[in-house]
Amino acid sequence: MDGLLALTIIMIVYAIGDMITTKTKAIISMLFVASVLFAVMFWMGLPGTIFQDSMLQPFATVTVGLLLVHMGTTIKLREFIANWKTVVVVFCSTIAICAGVYFLGQLIINRDMALIGAPILGGGVVAFLVMSDALKSAGPQIVLFGSLVLVIQGVVGFPIASMLCKKEALRLKGQILDGSLTLMEEKKETSDGKKEKKNIFQVPDKYNSPNFMIAKLAVVALIAQKLSALSDGKVNMLVICLILGILAREIGFLDEGSLTKANGFTFVIGAVLTNVFANLAQTTPATIASMIAPLAVVVVIGLACCALVAILVGKFFGLSWYMSFAMGVTALFGFPGTLIVPSEVVRAVADNEEQKAILTENLVPTMVISGFVSVSIVSVLAAGIMAGWA
Figure 1 (cartoon, rainbow, N blue to C red):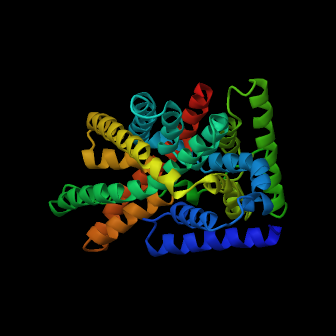
Figure 2 (cartoon, rainbow, N blue to C red):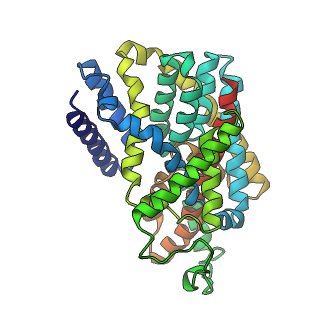
């Protein structure tokens, strides 16, 4: 295909996906919409080379490391330490998803399907990139199965999380009405009100241009690549990118959300997603239909293991089973769903502004942090380990 025509078609599909996601308040994800559209178009004769012709796939190959470093810069260690109970619950439940799907799933379905589906169900796009690369020798059918897990997880996760958050919100509302739950006093001595400490990497704002920020991301990604090479690829480069991104932000070398600040996130993530949709070019309706049963196995086992472990660990910390399970199920959709779901629930349950403020304080931060732990950290580390089992 002509390169510009290919790019135009892809971006129109993405735009339609975004519109439907916005209209359904993220219940139907852009990934799901775009996957359906691309699959149908491929069946109608759209060239399977569209992603290569658009040059997005080659672009994704060299920029995916920057995306992972950027993800690392969005993780605030202090915030995670302050919410350590949430971190422990989600860490355990996400590991349970990955381990359960792999060890139990392979008793019912193909081992490679269980292996690729495990960390993807427990995470998202990054886990897919790691596992699809590790299992590409297993054949396009296995990688396609991983794509389907990625596409369907949000469709399953959103309504479950919404239902659980609503039950938790109603429980908290009862405590508000009987006076046992009130709004916590905000500490005035917040970091927002203080001047940021200078560090050796700080440069004047006028020099901290988008190109400068991207250059720093590239430097960190390159270091990650070299470190991965030193381990003969045993430690996945993307996992190292994530870890170095966290550390580079902590020492002040990188800005928080660097790629977003540099106005590059949308295009880079759009390019990276072509690796998810490219596998649909080899599908037929019969191929998709044949994968419904193993897909159901992966989802059911994953949810069962998530619920069991999240509820047990949450009970140990005195959390309600609603909230514990909701925290665990964030692995199926991540941010911004982790912000949208509790926010919608709060609006629906609260009778006044005071209730809204208290419910927001108790639901939103917990869900957002849960999503970061499951999707951005645990699933990436699990994928890095499980890729070695391929």
